[in-house]
Length: 168
Image (cartoon, rainbow, N blue to C red; front, side):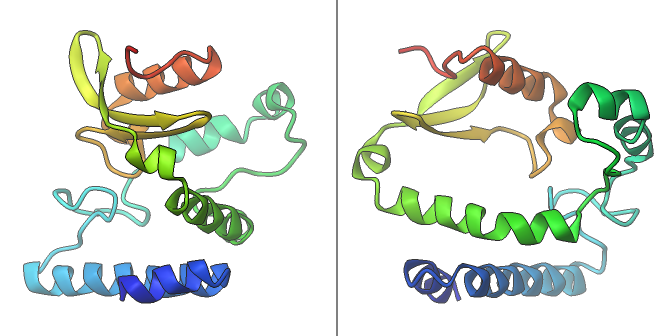
């Protein structure tokens, strides 16, 4: 199925590519859950998924929906929710387009991975060329702060301060 996803991306049929690739990952996850007889957390397959969305985010939801936080972030009165279909739909083209762009970037593709260090320990690997950076975070699933909060804070700090992830 992967070649079909790639071919749709190359053909600039981004929404179809997203649907095809998502169906592929859903199929794999469902088959694994049947075989293992448990609900698998798609963000870290070593873990179970005890609640919808796999994590209790009630405190986060409360915080992000406070009026003072809305004012500080300048987001108006829109209520934050996990896994918003509106946000997902609007990000599909951007997400797939960035993947397509990276496929054709020879300099980025030929760049080597370097260690990303946090508090003296290897936290992951980073690959960068010009303004494009790919950071692979060790021991983390899709939602990095849920798994490795210290490393997530380092990512945010480096991003805000425009600091590199690896020593030159």
